[in-house]
Image (cartoon, rainbow over all chains, first blue to last red; front, top):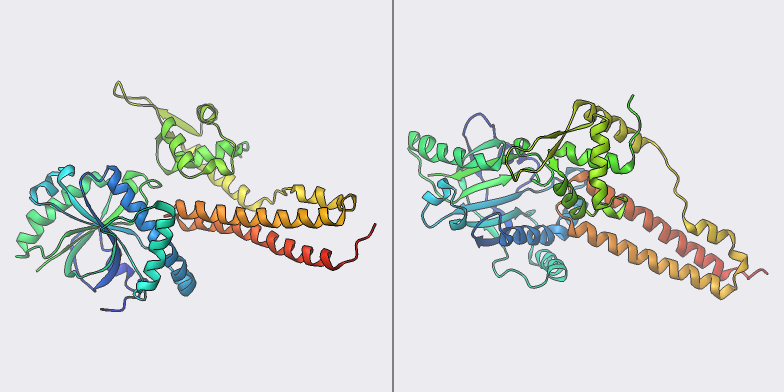
Length: 201
Length: 180
């Protein structure tokens, strides 16, 4: 697994240009993840987010101590797919499957992760069955920064799959990946920044 | 220079500045962020405060379009200027707050030795409880932006410094002969 200094690679990985699709080689990184399915406006999705942020809290405090001013708040990320991929582009929210994730520092081990899980169990009760620490391999990917409401993400996704990929003879090689750079409860829809990433081959 | 705003007015103006919101949404945000911890703003007073801000020209309301649409409040340019001025003044002004502890310590000699020392340890316990209570709120509210994390750190740092003072004072007073 590649050792990733979150800050040094931040701009390449997390702040792509917004005016065009660009290529990036994503190193393997480890994440705290929870899987689920169904409408992202539903309770399950909100609960999964709450769990992830609670689990990473002790890890975050530890990271802050180690990195000091170099600490960067890791954003919420989500992989999206559906049994029939048409549902993804069409926005049939009830048919969606998702994996919510937050990136972990490369030094996070079982002990540190378990500490986070324990904190969360204390606060939130029984842990979600799918909660895990896992490595995501994406490799060569196409990405773009979208500025605006989450509702418009579908259009960007459609453009990527219907225009950019065919034009460059590329095929998807992994799940559709969104990285939410803003907290939607504190940021107006038109100001929200989201990275859309698609591993390709 | 705009007239100064009350704490509630500044709070509501700040929330409207993030994005246009209607009254009930504001209520939810205030509740979710635990803002009632440190401000006195009731549910009914949100509309009262919005009315005052509107009168001052700092927010404006958008007329509902649909039958079910709720009246949404937006910040005006004057509101933006007022928010900046008030935020600067809130950060720079040192407003002393007086703890009941000061009044208690002044009257220390009216107490028996045990009473006095026990009272200090009781306070020390209460401070520890408060530190963990605020730490839990901070955890429950994750994720928080840096400036809000700093706000929590401030409250906890103040309590910890009081805890230190209590420990030192308790040690000192315990060793000292009791004067009558």
